Length: 190
Image 1 (cartoon, rainbow, N blue to C red):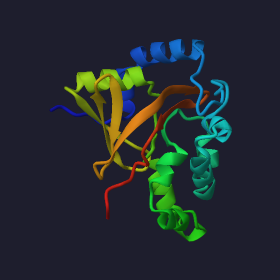
Image 2: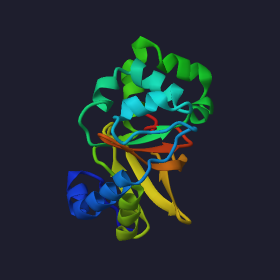
Image 3: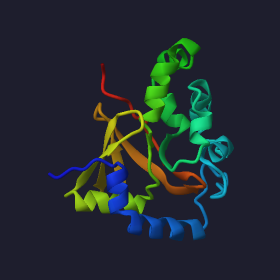
Image 4: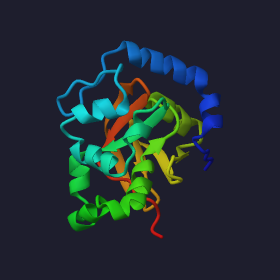
């Protein structure tokens, strides 16, 4: 099984394809998230704030002091867990993570959902196919995610073996793209 790291080199290798896919997605209507319209002219934070199914993620990004980063130039690909994904976590542990003294741990978890590239699902599928069925993706937080296909759907597996399904793909942003997922991705246990 061949694998690759989803870094600047990989993005450069797929730049022509990715640029076309991004341009096409930008021209099409953005998918709605939780019944809310998402604007390709707004950044990741602005759109996430408008999503009724990502309120816990928004609160966590604020608590982790990552608002300015994710509102920045990017480009970023964010695998955005829903409120239901956060609800599946131990709620006492989640509450503890949101405390100021645990900001570094929360930042690591959240940045394990962020890739420093603009990768539409077609880009990820191409990488999976080019790498023989799965591809390794390095996140801003240093986590290694494994992307593969489940039928026609892209799934992402974290370092603990948890599999996240993409519920809403290709939500175009002014500074990247969001893929809404059903599981909170976690780094390997220390």
